Image 1 (cartoon, rainbow, N blue to C red):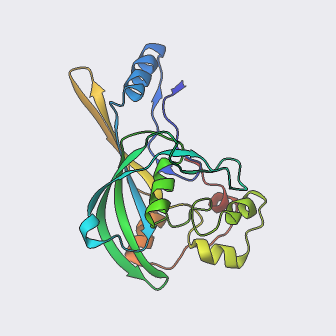
Image 2: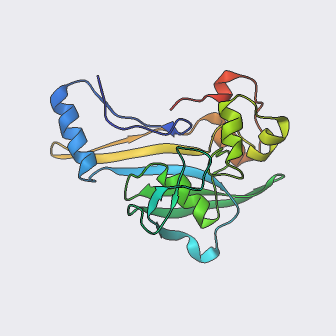
Length: 207
């Protein structure tokens, strides 16, 4: 078995696995040549401006040397080029505030690219412990010390980012795969009460 693509720890959705070495090599070439079209769904804080229903975020990314978290990156002038196409699918309100459902199409594949671009744009992912309201939430999470107030600030046990569609050329046509978000994602959109933080499944999601 050959894993072709990876997702951040708390991102749900599609991953590609090849069973044969030749297929794995071909798929990795498609990824390296940027011939794979990826679409994500994201729920973010706030409402993007009305004139931003389709926006290209283009900010270079690199190591965040000011952060106390070793794995954190940021927008920086000397970073690697990164582009994310954003489409606003829906703006909505809940008792906790204003939110938007976005469709994201990364044009590059930098580490944490979508999360950093959204946070720099002023609309961080709901539930993002590293690029959300306070990076110290990430450290508390790693140490299993999230307080009730920490959880209230995060709203969701997971970051609201879902890899919902993959499309790439294959043989004489193209291959397209889709996967719906998990129920908690849909529940948040529908205005249902926030989920309970009940145990390790919520605090250490796979995907």
